[in-house]
Image (tube, rainbow, N blue to C red; front, side):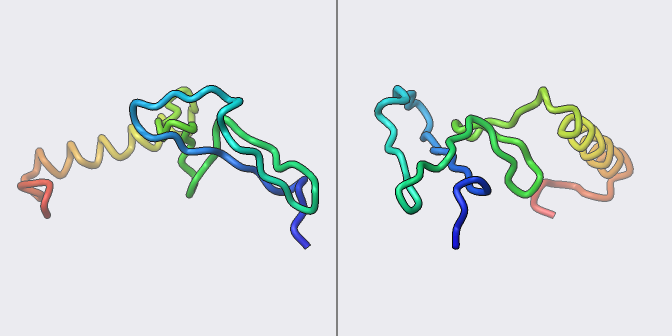
Length: 85
């Protein structure tokens, strides 16, 4: 059985749209509402309902910094010449 306590929902809004909360549909499991979240982690990446990265999350900033250092290293040492590689 699906539990509403362990379920959460996030409406993903397309670019340029900012609907009011009352315009968004509600979903139910066995008559009980599913909790709606403003932010959620997908594969460990925190995003909001507008598909924007949550940069105030410290673990995200650390991951981004590591990736930027790696990309800089690859470019400096001419290991990767273009983004296509």
